[in-house]
Image 1 (cartoon, rainbow, N blue to C red):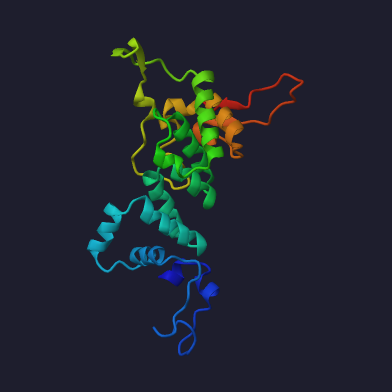
Image 2: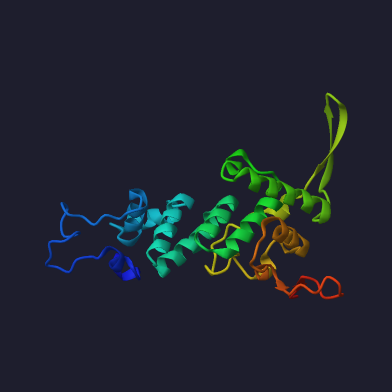
Length: 251
């Protein structure tokens, strides 16, 4: 199954043709998988060769981001398109916003990079300490600046309510935001090639604001288009001449 699913595993490791006395013919003379973690390889074997139906059910119900990242890493390394597609489809549900950025860059899943930044910059709460530890200080500044620009330059919604509370500085007014625009989509993705569960009309409204994506393009130097969010990306006009906007909505 491993050789069948991979387009280059047999070639990369020069697997022997039996009978032979080369590497891989016995426990005493194994094939060394350089640069491969034992845990990642064990998880891949569990996926390809489940010992029982119970093991298959455990994978389906208990595996989350860490386990499927192992599968994505090795399926990308060994050109296993079907396994990689399954890993992408599953991680699209379980990967955190920060992980989408890193996994998207590492494994060339371009839509995830934009989606990760969109979620980080539009989530109701700032970066957590755990998220911040994964980014460089330069990247943290970019995320903070993008969030600040979106708050100042883009009107996403009106506050849901005003809360008055007593503090040591006296009575203070606090705006409570509406968190509905920031909800995470937790359904199974129907198409692993898309970064969203359903067609564009089901993406949260705040994510479809074109100015949000202009800010993200400027801050993070994103090269992909925003077609997933319902925009037809156009060529920038000559700045000295009047022309169409960068984004045009498809609906």
